[in-house]
Each structure stands twice: as structure tokens, then as C-alpha cells.
Amino acid sequence: MFEKQKSALGKLDVRYSYLILALALLSFLVTLALPHIGEEGVYTISSYEMWYKQHFLYPILYGVNYGRPPLYNWLIIPIASLIGWSKMILAARLITLLATIGTGLVLAFLSKRLFKESGFALFALLVYLTGDALMYHGWIAYSDPLFGFFILTAIAFLWLANTEERYSFIWLAALSITAAFLTKALTAYVFYFLAFALFARQAGKRAFILKPANLLAQCLIIGFPLVWGALTSGSNGVGMVQDVLHKFALHGFGAYFKQLVFFPLEIVLRFLPASGLAAYFFFTKRITEPEKEPCMMATLSWLIVLSFIPYWFAPDTSSRYVLPLYPLIALWIARVLWRLKEVNVKHCLKWFLAAVVVKYVLVLGLLPYYQARYRADALSIAKQILAKTKDTPLYINDPTATGLSITAAVDVLRYPAPPLTFPSLAKEADYFVINKQIDPSVGNLYETFVLDKQKNKIYLLCKGKACNS
Image (tube, rainbow, N blue to C red):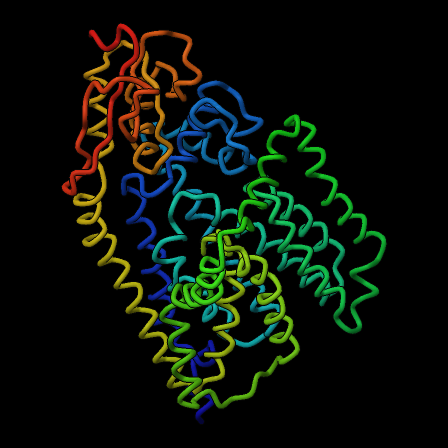
């Protein structure tokens, strides 16, 4: 009788779960219209410059090679061209949103194929979509969500290829990890080959994953960055290698201690409320049901730990660098919570709904207030700058988040004039420079613009005859 009363999805309340999922997905749409936040301008501006100059081999930022692969830009450009470059932040966030949803779907697909329990795939999806992916990194216009999507897809196909002995999945994994590299960085291969090495050691599967056809795919994966480096004359490859080495630069004992202690804690906090619920139920000894797939859970645990270690010991690391691990961590937490009794799983759903409600409060209330008080109105500042400079050549020497936001606005407002570049690329002797500080080596102070209620400022400097205009 008890079994008959249970939901078609096992422990889950089906309608309640889909309601939470729908509200979570709808909350992403609310974020699309927000102005530039943080360093989102990096990819909107570089996409605009690539489109303007019809140069698509690698991103250009402020007129110079940005040193990263261009796949994220390639996806932004056709959408921004269609809806208008004044909405380029919308185009970039649409790509991020689709990547986040795609990551969730791949996670659900992997969960269903590996654990084969009714309702668990939906539960794992809810764990993923009610943490940091919901609050920030799932909608912000950075390349990391797309990077994470391709890496998860590659690992998922590699894992399923090993468990189900499917050659097609090996090649899908190879295509996915190549797309991940083209999205951001060489570190895609760190996640992938750690997973490959782990799966290759699984008992009874070694013969399949190491078969010649599968090894050929891995050789092609390794060879692709070399081909790409040749196409870009090696400039992007050198930049990516230097970027990785910079993360391990020596910063003193204090920086390492802070990283070792606080970085794992930060990741745990980014999975609230699910991580907090898992800790609470564990310490109150309410996780009583045994794990039905202990071998899968062990593999998942090793996969997370081995992939996390390189970033844990790199003192110059941000939580977004381990975004490819987010869905795997969500899967691990979901397995822990899934071992609760049905009534406690339903308590988890209430907390997930609360997280979605908090997201709406943040996006519709607190974030606009924060933007108005602590962040510049980039569009207004851009209009003031253009009114001062008129037709005089204008350059940018501010790579900060504020400078990027203002540059994005200026570029669109003054089209068809060329996008702003660094003053080092100036061909004229007389021009203006948007600068983050007063710097006589760059130019003379012409105008000061107050950015926000905290009295932060940005400066318009002048060179040559521009100072007399």
C-alpha cells in the first residue's frame, strides 16, 4: 500500500519538483536585462571588435590579441548581429543561460544512466540549479559556464563509453573536450585526462577504453592544440600556458594557507542550501539508507578530488575555475541526500524553493540597489564622454570592470566609428584617453567623471591639441 502511494518519481513530489525547476529557469530570464556586471565586457567587447574588423581567428580586446580561443565569441556574434549590438550583453548571457541549462540536462542524463533510480536525475538537477549556478555563475556572461558544459559532456560520454562500451561515446567525448579547449583554455585537458586515467583503471573495463580506436581519438585530442597554435601563429597558445603558470606563482606562505583553508570552504558555501542540508543530516545521523551504487560513488568521489587538487594548491585561483566540477559535486551531494528517508528529501525540496525565492529577491531588489549605489551608470558616463570628445579620436586605458562597461557603451553609441583601443595603438598626436587614474605619462587631465555615490572616479585625459578643444 505504501509503495502505491509513492510518487511516480520515487521519493520526489513530482509537481513540486517541476515547479521549483520552472521557477529556477524563469529566474535566469530575469537576469538577462541587467547591465554589465564585473568583467562581462571582456567577451562582449571582444566579440564586437571581431565582428567590426571581420577578424574571427581569435578574440581582440582593445585592439590587441586577447590570448584566448574564440568559440564563446563565435556564438555571441551571430546572436548580437541579429538582435543588435546595443544588446550584446543579452546575446552573451543567452549563451551562458543555454550552457547552464545544457549542463543540467547532461547531469540529469548522466545521473539516470549511472544510478538508474526513479526520480534521482531530477533531484540531482535541482541540487545543481539551486546553488551558485542559480545565483551567479549560471547566468553571468563569462566563458566558464560554456567551458564547464563541454567538459562535463566530455567526461559524461567518456564515463558512459567505459561502462557501456560504446565507441560513439568516445568520439563524442573527443569532440566535446575539443570544444571546451576552443572555449577557454588548455586546462580543459586536465579535467579530461584525469578522468580518462581514472576510468582506465576501473576493473574489467581497461581493455575497452584502451583499445586502439579509442586511443586514436585521444591522440587527435592531444594534437588539436598544436594545429590550433599553428593557425594562430602560436600567440594564443603561449598566452594560455603563461596564464596557467601564473596561477602557481609564488605569493608567500600566507596566500597558500588562505587557499588551502578557505578555497574548499568557499566551494561548500557555493552549494548552499544542498551542501548545508547534507552536512546537517550527516551530523544528525539521519542519512541511514545504504548507497546502492558504492562503486559509482567511489569513482565520482575520486574524479572530484583528483580534479580539484590542482586548483586547491594554486594560490591565484577563483571558484569559477572549477566550474566544470560543479555538476559533479552537485551529483555527489545529491547522492548523499538521496539516502535520506522520503520525508527528509521533501524537506530538501522546500529549501530548494527557498533558494529560488532568494534569487528573485536578489535580482529584483538587492542587485539593482547595489548597482545604483556602488556601480557606475556606464551608459550615462559614455554619453558624457562622447559629448566632451565629439569627433576627436578617443582611446581607452582602463581594463577594469568599470572601464570595460563604459567601453562597451561607447563602442555601440559611436558606431560606425571604430571600437576603442589602447592609446599605444594611436596613429594621431592629438586624442583623448579614458583612464582609471590621473597619469601624466598617458595624458593631461581634461575631465573627471564621478561614477557612483561612493565618489569613485574615472578620468578623461587629453594629448596634444585635444587639450585645447
